[in-house]
Length: 291
Image 1: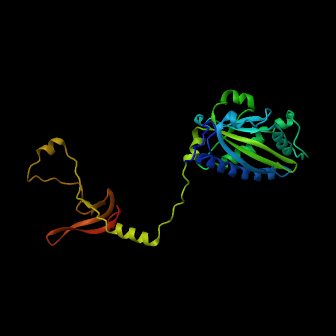
Image 2 (image 1 turned 180 degrees about the horizontal axis):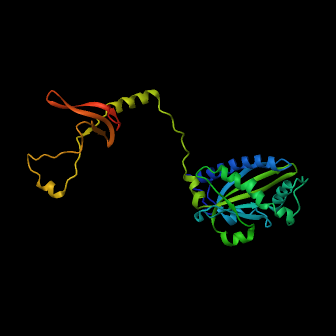
Image 3 (image 1 turned 90 degrees about the horizontal axis):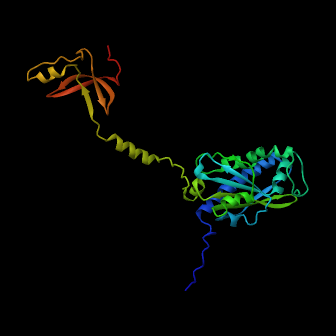
């Protein structure tokens, strides 16, 4: 008998949610690569290394303390915040590239200059927010980046929360680094695992259309002919008896209106065919009668 393997509920095995989350990130990375080739004077390649579910503290154990954590939020508070976790060396490299500089190694740990800091919002929008929004598989997604926070400050509030975390390897001509994107297990991020792929509609075949048209052609239709109408009072209506005559507003010189399903269909003249009442079609719809 096989011995059951222990399950760490703080770090469950990957499932449908992790696969869907990973597919979204991979689509976004392709757009990131396209944008970076347009904005930066050096080449970058990105690869999704892993997607895991676990507590935020467990998932960020390998993240350097100096990493910048940017909250990315939607307009729905039920979604919580995505966390874009960038090591300072990666952030500085991207900012230097936006300024046209080509480093020969990952920068040493330092604060961004005033000029570099002024480009952070642009960096986040062009290389991260827009690719993530355009790659989202469901309804339109709109993300807003908040102010950078330290990893310690984030963990102080969210340490035990269950999250999805994608580790992304970024390779430059001078070496490789890793950054992370983490999502809380709530709101639209949680629903990724239950979304069904859309199936494109298949146009009906000619044979199917012919069968449908034949079926519709033989459906019974009730056609009503309105003889006319008259306004009266409740008292006069109550006093009516057999043999009384009501004069309708309909002129004998105008055809009658016929209706199908509450829609005017023909104008017709009343008549007879043998012992049965009949009508002679005069005009289509509610057109005026022929002169």
